[in-house]
Length: 508
Image 1 (tube, rainbow, N blue to C red):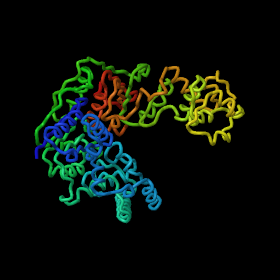
Image 2: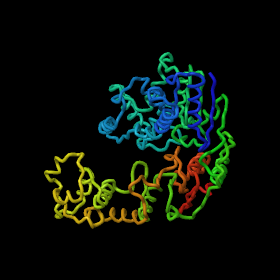
Image 3: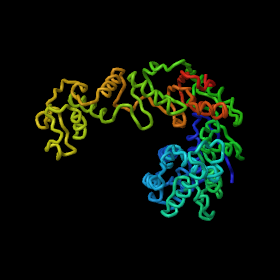
Image 4: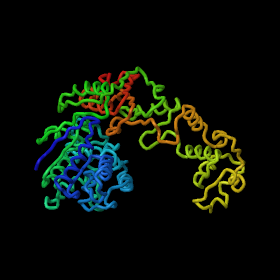
């Protein structure tokens, strides 16, 4: 077996490089596509690689059936079905039975590839499995934190979970990896080529799975970047990548970072003691790095923006500030303007300007027209209307009870929209935010932004009490986190100082 270790600093085209390897294996080495495993840390990364491989290499989804996450591979090889996976109903049942609130750790796997439950008991139970420890040993780790009820309560919950799962043949995401690793080697999938992406984020348990997968492989490619290893707190073991033996390649040209941003980020990451040294260059463009004493929201008048914070609490505060200034933004899947209000506003403005609307869009603004204006929400004729039928303003007026003048703008016609929502939408429009498109401003924690990028990044340096304490104990961990934040920026990096005493000063 030949092992290749690929280190990909931010924006150096790691996925592109790995897909070139796939192409070479297909074209030059004549490897059957079903004998190539491309295993990513997250669903997002796996889906992106699959989509790009299909479009670039002229194959279909069935050809690349092994482009997936480690969890997905375990799920398939264990012949599991959806009913086998623990869901919210299972955890609610256990919560009621045990009289203890338990959260579902599987939800976060979809995003991060490992379990990060909010519930402290589930965190310890899941964290122990990820690290290959007993629940008691992980509980006794000084970094685990305080558990109300102590070890006895933890054991009580752990034993109840085990009994429940066994009785119903249920698995959580971590259980799948554990079970896969216990399978007989003869039953392992047999790949000629194995590619492991984002390897710095793999836990001890996932590395054990990788070791089994690559047993019979002819060539193995393990890609990642230890400088971007920001999930150590969740069990990630980047040292496995750093110490792996084999042919080493460092991708040395970033297609994302401009010169000044590259220099700023590089200056920070070189303070990390335990890392693989990498020489890599930026784009030719100079770029821009600014440091502000407070948020300079007026600086976001145009362009795409990514606002990053160390923790979610700071984003909670920022959301209110952005609304005051009339910015239209998104945080995860949630958009700042209420979806029902947005649909109603756009539908009203479209139809009064002469556009024809289907029944769904008509009903969206009918819901906000004041009672007594002639609108019959339960109008019999509207109940049975053809879904494909299109309506004009005149038709609604003559046949469907609409008695509002088309001369009225939405904020006067749709009187039932709450005043605060109405005010916010009007402010967004005055700022010329395009509410018909996805927001140009996105908010995210630094951890949630990994793999993303934007022309302009605003990086908040605020630290919570907990993060501040961690900073003084584990400086390198915080350096990696803010390094990831800095390296999301293509052209402009705006570093915003905290208004409190707790801030990551090394970013300046």
